[in-house]
Image (cartoon, rainbow, N blue to C red; front, side, top):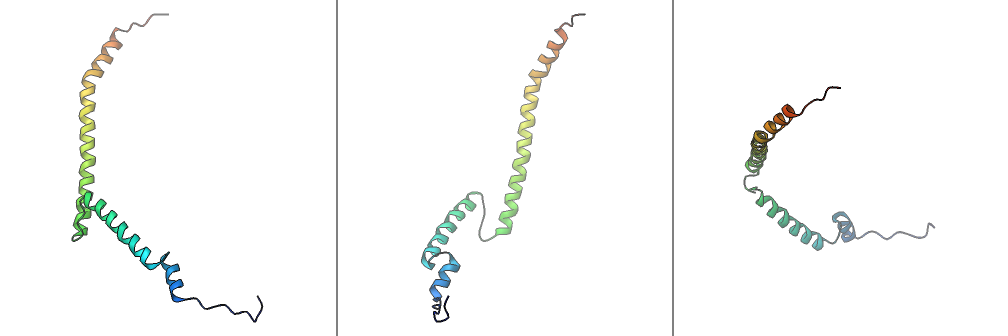
Length: 101
């Protein structure tokens, strides 16, 4: 660039818009809508904005208990199926004849 050409100083609004990722009003509107959406999702899983630590602990307890309830349910289905499957397998093995060679 020639020495006689000077760059124009950047405007404060351009710097702010570049920092925010868009015009301040558009960014504010996106943040408000995103906050509402995330708030609805967090409220649906039981978070409380006034006691966030208690809400996180309650969520962890819920997930923990859900995991053990799942294991308990799977164990019950396994036992129920095993009552039928194991005797049938055992009977089929007992009555299958091995032919001598």
